[in-house]
Amino acid sequence: MPIASPAASVALEGFELRVLHLPLVSPFTTSFGTETEREVIIARALTGDGDGWGEIVTQREPTYSSEYTQGAWDVARRFLIPALLKPRTLAPEDIPGLLEPLIGHRMAKAGLELAVLDAALRAQGRSLGQYLGAEHDRVPSGVSVGIQRDPGALVDTVAGYLDEGYVRIKIKIKPGRDIADTAAVRDAFGGIPLQVDANSAYTLADAATLAELDRFDLLLVEQPLQEDDLVDHATLARQLRTPVCLDESITSAKAAADALALGAASVINIKAGRIGGYLEAVRVHDLCRDAGIPVWCGGMLETGIGRAANAALAALPGFTLPGDVSASNRFYTRDIVTEPAVLEDGHLRVPTGHGIGVEIDPAALEDFTVARELIRR
Image (tube, rainbow, N blue to C red):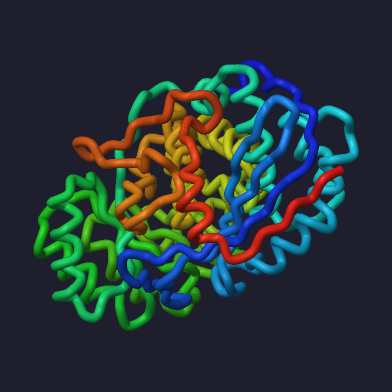
């Protein structure tokens, strides 16, 4: 399902980059560390027809990914933005080709692409959902639960999210915090839709431990091995009844095709901010839909900018599993958009306004900004 019709071309005048520090409502712990504050780069595309907003989903340190805030800031201002400013006018569909000679840095590319998309679609009077091919006006919302103090605390935390109405629970696991935690949640809440996320914390030598998860009737086990271990993932998948889902391994449509060809995954997590942008996300979606592979939309603790865009993406027909597009208050007491995403009967509404469909709260943006730079042609 390719993009139905191109977005409008824009006369790109420059970009404004900001680093924001947003406090999290509670610490978020995974196998690679604990976050208490979200550091993120917000990109503002400046055009003659109005501005557009994007989000670069890197973190402060290169622990989840080789990309990190200062690296993304540097490559965006020194290489990516100058490449985008060379043409007199720019269509969003031109961006992948313009940036292809610059290797890697997919998160930075994705944030700049979203900013241009937002500006172009606002000028054209179209929503991002319409542009991408969304078929739903709301999407089911799952929640990602970090590693807690102990299994009892995990059960209490999950109970709170179920009370709020989330329709699927994902718990983070790592060696030593896997079987007991999963058992505690399954025993406490019966047959709720439940999955686990290892964030690459295991090796093939842990196959026996991971096979113990089969008894919990999970939707999937997400990214158990290292991101470049496609062959080992294929070996592991043959030893488990639980479907293996790949996340960090899926860096492009080519990577997704390779994983499926090897039998390394039977479910794919699509994170537009990690694979280079929403145009590439649609390509992965189309590939998986044609192959009969279920996909769902992952999250990177996005602000209201990325959260709105993810809701639009998750409304495409191939997204058949609830994703991590949760309400804004799951992570933030104060977001940077005027109408933060809220949970309604276990779902989030897909924004219908022009572009990404949300407006920036300028006071909040200023309050959370710790660095700012303007790059013009």
